[in-house]
Length: 79
Image 1: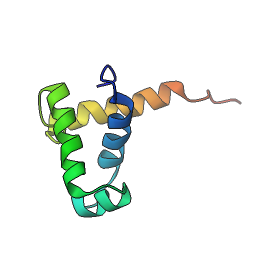
Image 2: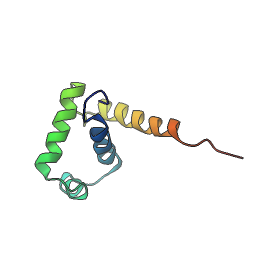
Image 3: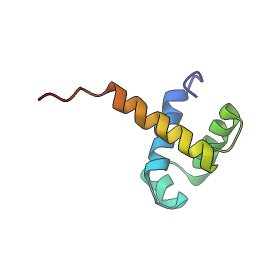
Image 4: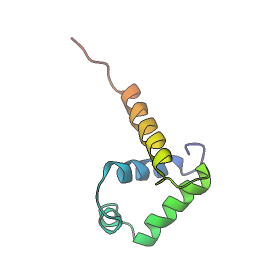
């Protein structure tokens, strides 16, 4: 996904989707986009990864990848 010209934006969008338990309407409102735009972004991701980003396996893989990337980039704990 990151190889796409808008990959970082799409991953930020997906992370918000995955972190939320809100409905599509509520998420679209939170993200300040129309529901049509919301679904268009999901389709764009689907075209990049060749499956639905809401498919359980893809969702788990992508969400874990995003979280582990953040975890690896964090400041180490200091004692």
